[in-house]
Length: 157
Image (cartoon, rainbow, N blue to C red):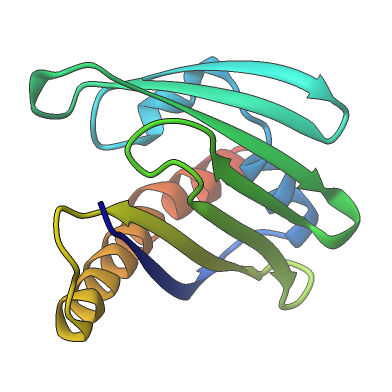
C-alpha cells in the first residue's frame, strides 16, 4: 500500500511566559486525556530524563485504538518531538517549540509529518486537501482546547 507524506506547520500564540508554557506542555501525565475532544486514557512511562513513552487509548467510532508515542524533550531549546511508534500513523513525527515573545507571552511553533497508508496513490490535489484538513484540525485543537487550558492553568498559579 502506498504511503502519503503530509507535511504542515502552524503557530499558536500563548498568553504565558515561555518557560512556564514549556513546563506545562511537557508535564505529561495520566490526566492529560481530559484535554482532548474524544475520550482518551493516557499512560506515561519515563525512559530517561529526556525521553518517555506515551500510550494513549481512544475509542474512535466506538472501537478501541491504542497508540504509542516516543517523546523526546529538549528543555534548553524549549522543544520536544513526538514520534508515533504504533497505531494508524506509525512513524509520523511532530515537532514542537516554544518561542518567547516577551516576559508574559510566547508562541508554539508546530511542524507535523503525518504518514498515512492509502489503498491507492493520492493525487497532488488530494494530498494538499489532506494537509489542509490536518493542519486545520491540529491548529484548532491548540486554539480551542490546549492553549485555553494552558492559560487557565498558568493564570491560576
